[in-house]
Length: 310
Length: 303
Image (cartoon, rainbow over all chains, first blue to last red; front, side):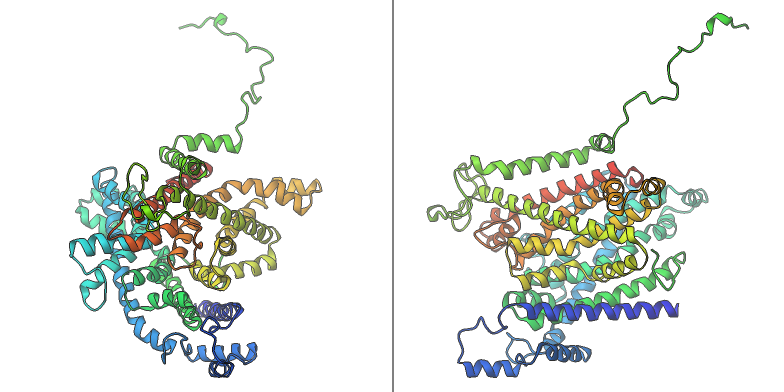
């Protein structure tokens, strides 16, 4: 176990380092400096700006400086937000992004498994068709379209929930729905098909013949095993919740990291793009590590060894 | 009870009881037979064929084109002349949907063709050569796989700049990883089988074994992955259009139409609804076809 953990942590660090290196060199491969799109500045001022942001240093030095800063969790200055650093943006945006992500996660897990269970129990009846239909919509409509529809038809037309903004709990409802639509759809499909599988197993018949009430059979006997495919979906799920934020925060105007990221792509604000990519990659790698460890707890049949199976 | 000897007669001479009396079905015939029995997949295929016809030949029947402004007819609701209405520059949304579907389909098929090529090469070499080379190549794949492709796509698109050609390159460069994994897995299991040993004994070299024996046997799996990657690429392009890294005007894709239409939804909802519905239809059709292909080529996987 210790050996496995050590190996996984080393490879996680390697991945993060590679992402840092890749983003650094890609962003520096873009022709023209970050300020070259501005109106023509006097050469002396341009020189000063370059000095200020160390853009005249040799690339290798800039790279080493950047690595050193990242190691200290310092993502450098932003180019477009006057007097603020990328760290300031993160400090401001991360709590909102995390809050939205958590609500969407809970919604997706609870909603998805419930819809999946209901669809499986009422196979080929109305609830099954409704759940399957909703799941199909969830995977076939682009998230920005879905978010716009929710914002306009539910938020703007009915006034049930505020269509835009941040601050109160009810502001979270529509963005969280938009963000969780795709994972809800996937989890519903996974739960439905594995529930159908499990419900035909002998031990479920045994439980029934013992005279256990239906809800106990479903919740305690069937669901546990039916959820294993859902657990394996957790890696892509978390990746989706993170990257889905780009769209949802932008559409609903939530000042979180996703919105900063999309705005800075439009502004060509390279330090924010680099910082966000590195932050998200680090979060994901950490999360995947935790999921792999959690597997062994959920399913003791999975053995941890020093290397992955071929 | 007695049975007379006369009721028994010898089998007709010359009939080979062990012979193969029917023509053998090829992989394709077999798959097609199963595919045909799947109503969802056939429905998907029909819708897909209709959309492709609509995109390819629709513009010839339209009196409008996708980029000429007509400021006398801006923001018209759907009517007889413009069945899908017009946008804020007076362009016919139906005609734009045809051209948009063309570009979206082109991106789907084109980028998958690129990642197919890279993936087959990479996975084929990795799986067939094995040992340290395979290990090394798989570590690279693991590293790429551990970060969502969306982040790479955005980074590369920011570096290369928006535009159709760059979307091809970037989607092709990023999406080969799942393909390489599938091909490698197939090759790994196939190369241990007797027919490969036989081929090698007969003196076939690596290239011949890979191209003539291993790849044709993995073609089913490759097609399944490709069929599901095409809609993913179309989706990705829609997202890129949304964040401003998609195809550039006046070129139009379904994604760029939807993201332009988004702004007008309070007054002119049809300018979002039509392109969005086209995307959703394409997604559904491709996904049903993809699922159908999986059942057809790999009946063991069937649930």
